Length: 354
Image 1 (cartoon, rainbow, N blue to C red):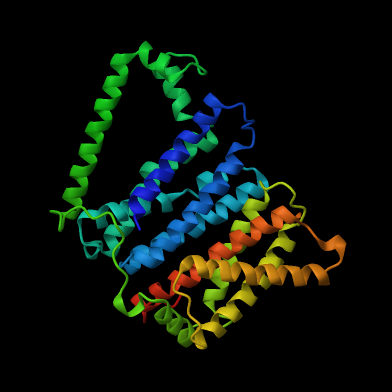
Image 2 (image 1 turned 60 degrees about the horizontal axis):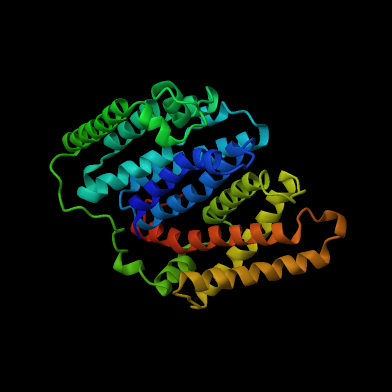
């Protein structure tokens, strides 16, 4: 409902979680980057679904999807190898591009964002913001808060922030003023880039097109245009497989290999697709997203129970708890995809061939 505040909140939490854990807990953070990147992928997946639901600029959606899947590949490769340089090669441009688009949408019509402006913006975000940030964090292995505390405020690393600020109050005031000035300059540059604002501040997501804003209309689109083995199934399978493999590296109790994980995901997602298309053509619509999730979760639980009876004991790569976790994760992704991909298809009919 509020995409810009939501992703800014996630960005803020992502920035301060490690210092908070270091300051207020005794949690071992040796594997922090693996956990952090997996959780990043989760909330970025939700943001990607928001682009399918909300964005009205076709080129922007396609650029966002490219950068999302580019990052997804990089995170999966990092989780498998531990090579931090991969996070530099596959930067998280998607996140800042999402923020850029939502900032524009909040004051301007996104029709002003032609292909050239969008490409230039994506290149600048990557080159000026993300590549230096990815290098700083993942290659140089520096933490901004630690560097600021020790290098700028001249305080010990483990000192409280109250003590650190008291050491250099003038410096802190200068940094705050500099931040305000840079924010004003950024807003000024955006206004020059986009022209005068077209409307008052608008943070809620725009309403869905009337022709696709109800469940039975989305089902009609699925029933008419989706096939069992098509690009929708391919995209869902790839997305769920990558997310599953990434989370399998951090969730305890997982003994399945990546091949086993991908095979299991492919089977379940394919069965889900078959049942989804069949129910859509039968007109069995569920308006509530929560009820859709619960119904699919029950279906997937039944699939797992049947598979558990058929597979030999030695082929089981999950504990009961991890099975439930991955089942709910898969169910959430499939539910959101099936709910919002039809909006994209109808909104850009004739162009949305992938």
